[in-house]
Length: 599
Image 1 (cartoon, rainbow, N blue to C red):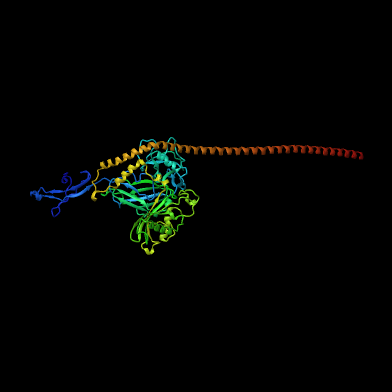
Image 2 (image 1 turned 60 degrees about the horizontal axis):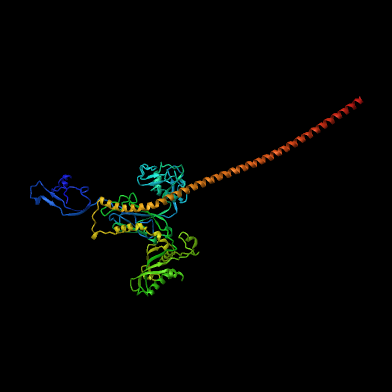
């Protein structure tokens, strides 16, 4: 036990008319964090009365001193980048948290475009900024929250929380013409990421070189996205003590639009004015939001099955739910609703049946894939619209069943379809729910956790499932104890990551070299193209000069001919003039002689 003399440190308020005085006191920073039983003793030493009259003790009060905020424990589950649509994604914390108090957003990048923005405000034409296809070529600038002080090329500008770098990201001085994927890879190789649009707009990358007026820079912001929050019906949250999980209800979205897309999860206090956060049971908020990215696995929908639960009424052959007659009746009811051909009838498979009453059952149904496309080959989901004219995915048949039950011929969002009474049921089907996608065998590798991470994943799930004994709040761990716990799991991560990094370094170097080669190839191609164009222009000019020379020669020849002709004509005129002159002289002589004779 610990004795603390509060009277020596805190001032009493003046006594009231009844002779009572109050004293405010606090235990913060006086005793370690933990669960305590507290009793306060007040003793009057001025009255001279017996001790039992001068001393008053309060009843024993139980309480907790907890000033340590919760932290994320390890990484988000599952420990892989690709997740199956509808699969639970979970975050484990160092202690139980309040399930109702936090904000949650899921932002999905739906289009294959990203934002290319000005690397420095007022230096670009605003109309050129915005959504850009990922194969466009733009400047690379990288950002990182890690302290990069003292590392060559990294700059931290005033008002920014990130370090930025552009020049000498590799052996090459600047990357000015790179695709989006290459830009991301370059930043990742430098243990950083692409800067966000907000960071670039705030001039956080100013002064990193490699920039010319008018250049656009890749940002990490998706051009077109769709955001869900915890109140959206598409997000189903499961909060249990120190683990917070959620999954996407596939009946609420267009699955084809989301497959293969990257999404960002953020949990905590999302908006500046929000009063929400991740609080522990004693009201301590998390210091920094939980934020991470994953990707919905790019599975082949032609090979995927769809599983769902169905409630049926009016079944006649299910007194023995394990009988083939019961299975056949359920399959026939579903197939008749979907108006399936005889060849597609076998795509309906009953996985399990549970009896509800004499004439009602719950069943788990699986719709098998239509493996072969119309042209006799497998089709990826991106190819389907080009080759098929009628829905053939297993999820298409599920949607058709939804529409039949609701009487609507559309593919709108649905959470759960429940028909309240047998009178309005369709062929005895009262409701369908809990839809799941089951990927084909060829896609399972994409959705399998790395064997090196399986043990860590199991440890995280086990820790997240731990409960408090008897519903009593667990003893509070001190900051040191929590740090030891977090450091332990971080150490395990780092050892595994280091092993993986050592294996990946060669690949990364090859990747960067490949990017350099591609960049060099593009530059060489551009230079070659410029040389070829210059050569063509030079040849065209020479041809023009030659043509002009030919024309000049023709003109000179014509001029010479004209000159010779003119000289000949001039000589003829001279001869004619001389002849006329002689004739005139002769006539004059004759006339003169004739006149002389006359005289």
